[in-house]
Image (tube, rainbow, N blue to C red; front, side):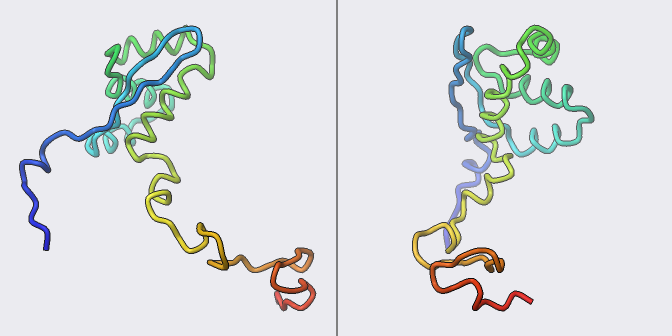
Length: 134
């Protein structure tokens, strides 16, 4: 059994990374804490959610929700996406984040987990016509 130092559980361990914005510069963001992630998931509206996430996650420069709103109004449509994607990645909020943490047999070379072939598909272990898919 592993003994955990409770003080370490309460110490912030949020990862940070830089994101380059072509033609603008580099910003630094951090992942959201669990409490922050749960809070922003309850916000209605995509623009409002984005403002809340970035106001929490921006390390350099720091920004308020109102300032993020000004950035939304001034930026090209795709400019903020790499920033929000990085925050989501650092926070473990991407759909495939949990999947990436665990490798399944199907992710490794070799037989692993195989999909059931459709009649029109070939298979490396035999002719597709010999597979009963009914």
